[in-house]
Length: 220
Image 1 (cartoon, rainbow, N blue to C red):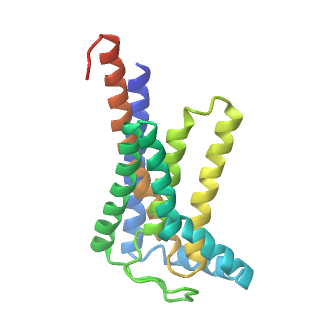
Image 2 (image 1 turned 120 degrees about the horizontal axis):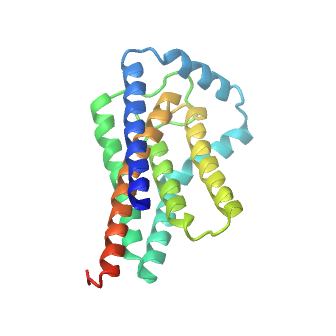
């Protein structure tokens, strides 16, 4: 019953993320979210300074390029060395699936990037944000996998707070740098959250089946 309850929560989260993504996409397609986007862009870029720009560039690199490649390689290596193959498969599937979903969605929506004030230059379409999706997938799946290894509520609370801070900071950096609309970031989080929820459901279902078979003495 407990495992079924958890699975239901994950499927519920996937439905919520899908519905919310659809709402944001509809508003974007109807050009009914541009006012919100521009107000938030102006607010964040109103803070522009050399110090903020350097910090935002550093934050953005946490979910792209060499830094994220190093993080992914290190995590996968730890899982493989400790023979946690199921966790390694989940980790890789979440990240790879998120990237594939982003490419498909961008090709479908084909939204051009903001033309207000770009501090850096990026190529490709804007909606949803690939960097936001990567950040959400990376830090959220790491939080999911580390959650059970932390016994205390305080420790788990700190882990969750760090995850939220990193994801939100990466998203804010892309808006500040002028390469994404806020709605691109929100949609990226929702799309990645949808995929993560589906992967968590499959992972927990597989874990429950494995535990059930082990209890019956069945060798997988």
